[in-house]
Image (cartoon, rainbow, N blue to C red):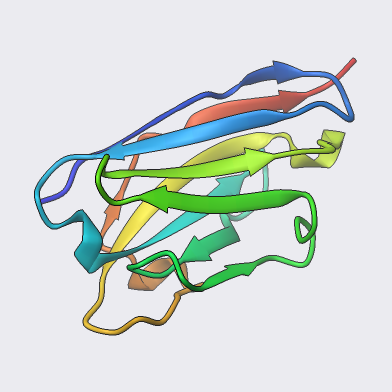
Amino acid sequence: QVQLVESGGGLVQPGGSLRLSCAASGRTFRSYVMGWFRQAPGKEREFVATINRNGGRTHYADSVKGRFTISRDNAKNTVYLQMNSLKPEDTAVYYCAADFSPTLGVEIRPMEYDYWGQGTQVTVSL
């Protein structure tokens, strides 16, 4: 069982930055592919970014590529999402998720993830 707790959301002006954190419980954090997803009002949950077990491979949605950076610290059981040059269309609830994986690949499909956090609100507005 893995529990995920996100933090770092808030209100920011367009062009600003935020850093989301997701702290995981348990001793097997390094066995999980980690992902960030988001859901805006009236829309389906969408993939944002993913990072493999050792942090050596990442993948991003086209809408955030070049602006967002996912990273992880396995010693601290934490995954991060650095968000720069934020736009109003980035407004959403952001969720982190964990996918138990025997490989060093990444995962963009939400149905493959085993555990989810409760979400943190990010609002980009003047």
